[in-house]
Length: 262
View 1 (cartoon, rainbow, N blue to C red):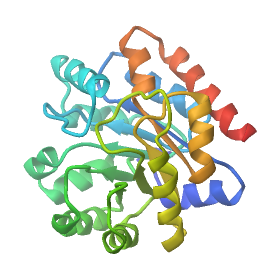
View 2 (cartoon, rainbow, N blue to C red):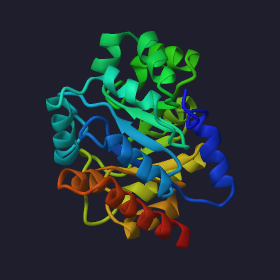
View 3 (cartoon, one colour):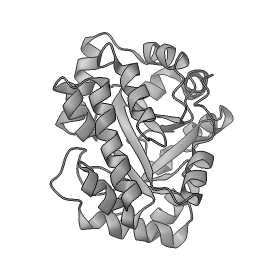
View 4 (cartoon, rainbow, N blue to C red):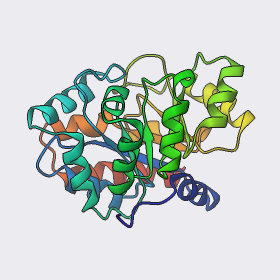
């Protein structure tokens, strides 16, 4: 298991306790020969954890950029097993979070998939299309393997449902900043700050805002209401357009500086 493995929640709580705003960049696994170098670059640039996308052919919650990245990875013959094998040799130095869709989890089986993540040095998982009411079995298998299940909260979640999401989420609560799919946006939706405040009112679990965080200024603004941000499409757009891992790392470093400056 890589040295980056360990409790995501413990790491994020410690960073938050030290007064740090949290930054979690995303990289689609297998989308290029140097994708592992991209993970290393964003980790070294100041990430508190890195989210690894395990590509699926029908990513229903993702917008055009992540869809394109997933399609490129699949066209290269990327499989979950190949990603796990490459991650197992990685020493990122920060916790790794897998993001994928339930079809892949179901196909492998809950226990096998969770144990594969753990063997690859992954600390947590996001399965965005698995409803709260149907995720108990996966959460149990994940927990048994040492994998924390990060749950998503939406702006339209009623208070009672939001409380259940927050209670069961591990690692952090993923606050979906706006209704819709992932993708770059010109501004951070006001719903993001409102949702973060609602979550903070019922829990001290770390809260990170995702969906639409595209620039350093947006990262700073969103983190004023939350503990930090998840950044995906803005990074993958540049990567798809030919940016090197080092350039992706510089993009993350700019966001890190904005968060640290407050």
